[in-house]
Image 1: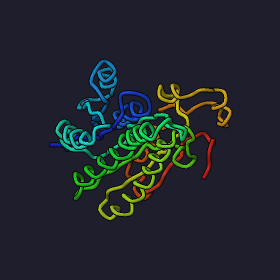
Image 2 (image 1 turned 30 degrees about the vertical axis):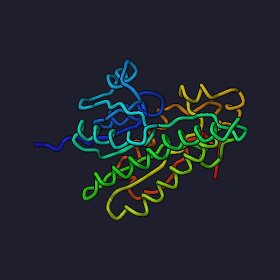
Image 3 (image 1 turned 60 degrees about the vertical axis):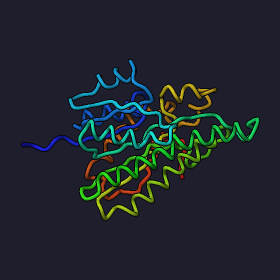
Image 4 (image 1 turned 90 degrees about the vertical axis):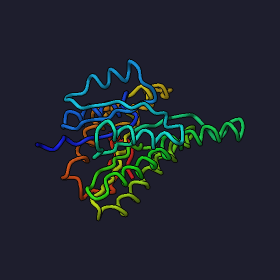
Length: 248
């Protein structure tokens, strides 16, 4: 009897970059566990659009501290095993240094760090325990903001910088166990979340030599490459996908 095809958990995968990543991995032969905050028509459409069979959807609000453990357990139950974790879920919430009160600042800061970084770290920990002895891969979807910083969304920039360093820590600690970690750092990408936060599209496009935002599928193609064995020796790397709009 042949071994089952590999399985991937992609968080925040009913829209935008996450949906494109899930679609690409399904085309690559993965059984994909999609994740979103709630079940519904959007989740059903994303699930139904995946190539192949054996896919599943799990709902979890990663703003809740206990959600990562429940999500990972449900994903393993649905797929039998997870070979690739893609930490893509994230929020982009305005919280400038001019916030009206410490309480307002703290609420936005903690919510952003919980969803974008703490949940990713918890899922990475759970993934490591799950694949010990056989190997696996973790890909973080960070952002150009990890290096460039943010003025009105500082918690977002800090959370994404944390993801980059989390990848480095995972890579150094676990390469000998064949557990590999990578970061993809997109710039402006044509998603609903990006467009909702964009106040001046012309100014944004003026920063990008290509004159356009990235397509989610272009980010997904990088994740697809990192998921392959050919990328094993690149563990710890961050790949920028920003159309030459930022260099470091």
